Image (cartoon, rainbow, N blue to C red):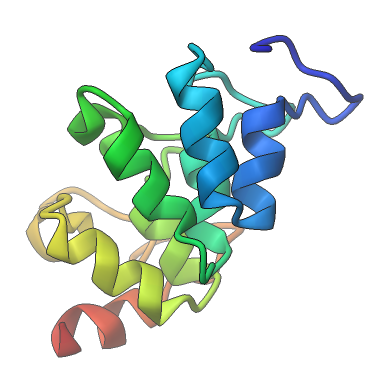
Length: 135
């Protein structure tokens, strides 16, 4: 279940996160799916869920189904980006607000070292500033 099933390195949990299937995410987590396994791009299923808005609650399913959820919501991918940063880069105001309500660290407001906002980065991160201010 935790072994990548496809050439992209996706696990069933990654796929459920991408499709926004909250019930499937919870089912997989309850059956020992590992939310820290990375795909071929170095993203955990939570990074994937942060990009896609879901009526069924992709991110919410992780919050409900993971013990130690704080660590999972704060984990950085191989590029140093958190799920919050991915949600912002995707323009998902809903997910940005959801993550900020869950008290994840807003690295853009509190970090004193250079961030992806102050140096070139492959993902456009401007939406986080707009969303963070309106939460």
